[in-house]
Length: 221
Image (cartoon, rainbow, N blue to C red; front, side, top):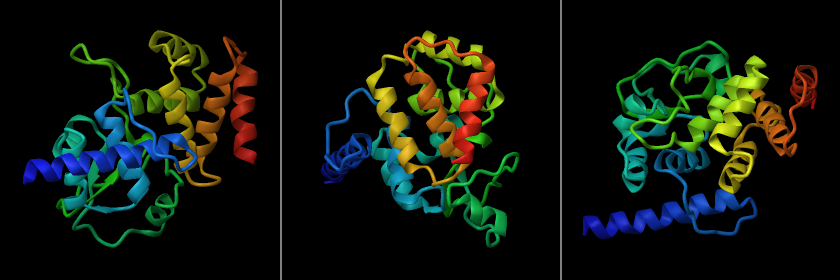
């Protein structure tokens, strides 16, 4: 019975994530998307960047072949927040999609969890392959966002080329899905949109001035 329930939940996960990636409400099959990125999309779609009940997240994790503890401790995707005091004003602003640079969410008792914002995922190895397995696609995008924000154009282009991301259709689908999920007017959305424009410039190696202007223009929108 447990196996049947798990199989059903996996089908639900594939259905929901397929709709997120398709951008038009149609449920398309999810093929080639890694487990961590699948979980991230499912969680982000249902709970955004707000606190989420641990029980639901455990079910989501299991359906993706993962555990909530691995997502928090190994993959640096989740942070435990249950048991903390009511969020302060700046924490409430973050839940709308705005990112607060430099602030680190504190671990709670575990009754609730939330996604760790990309600007608080600071591991130097994020986005690097490990144990012969490619880095999760969400990690690769978060690494690109870090490089973009820092103005590291040449490192960004080298990373894009080393991963073959310019011609990776799943990467482009995920990038667009994250843009749609990001808060309107947020720093996250501005970076994602500018990154998408940069990647879309076929074979382009823009100069640093143009590169930063693209980001600044997106911030003004």
